[in-house]
Length: 191
Image 1 (spheres, helix red, strand yellow):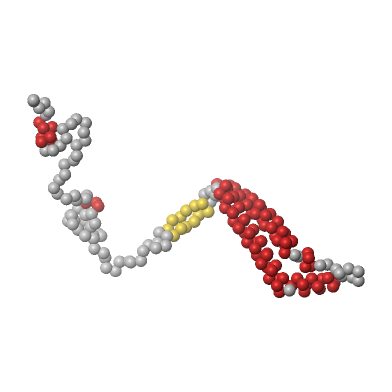
Image 2 (cartoon, helix red, strand yellow):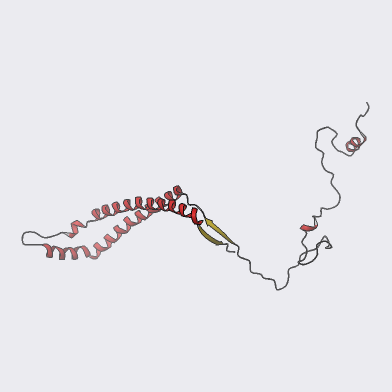
């Protein structure tokens, strides 16, 4: 059988290379270690890189500043998404409403334990009462269920108004940011 391949292909086949057409041939590995280009070597500061030896090691300068630099970035809030502002303000106003209801209940219990309602209620009933009637009963008017119901109504109104006003504020901010560019922030990274 005769070998019809060219002399270059025969040498590659004899050296262990692939002789099949269409196969990728592996690059030849050199026996010398890899040396990066001159621009990537760590040369001392101020030393010319063209004549620097290949194994040069960078030495720190004495008296060099050891405190790290703080990186700063100037950013601009160009747009506030009204949908996300509405969701966040809705959740925050619900949390504020729940805190308001709990605070009103705790305040009522503390004032009742101190006897404020009975003392003030007795004074008001004496001032408004006559011989036939006992006067205005403050303790029944300011009972805990009635106070909690009033506080809940106020909290629900607050949730609706705060959500609507925050969303409207996002629309107004987007309009004004289109004219003046928005709010600029300078952020610094702590190290």
